[in-house]
Image (cartoon, rainbow, N blue to C red; front, top):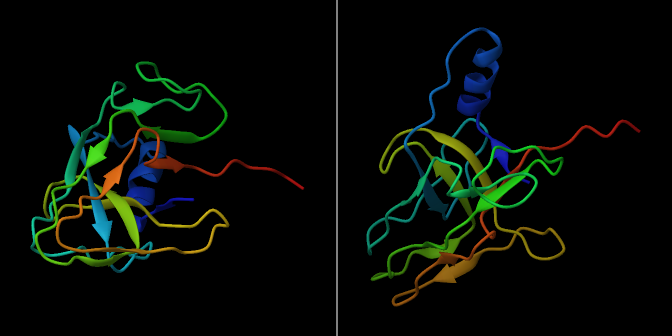
Length: 153
């Protein structure tokens, strides 16, 4: 499950305090060799063709919580995912072990809003090595984020 950073949590909480939250025109998907914490940080690959990939901040680019693109979320899953394939540039030098991904509000620098580490089918952290000639890809609905639902027990 994705984690909100302290930055994004503060932005969302400020909405309840009457502040306007203006999303960026694009989100930028970044990869991590070292996964950040809620406070931020993390380490992205450097050089070798690496760059964050833009993904529009609109209803057409993201599937809603009830599934399908083009409408506001009204479902109960708490999950949104990419509509189109997200494809990074071809790696021209080793990027190393990629351990996670996140959403930024800028192509370079900017603020990290959400992140997650890659996991295997059992939920264990799982990195993958990217070397020359490889091109990391998130297929449709493969890049997803969710907010936990409250389930009183």
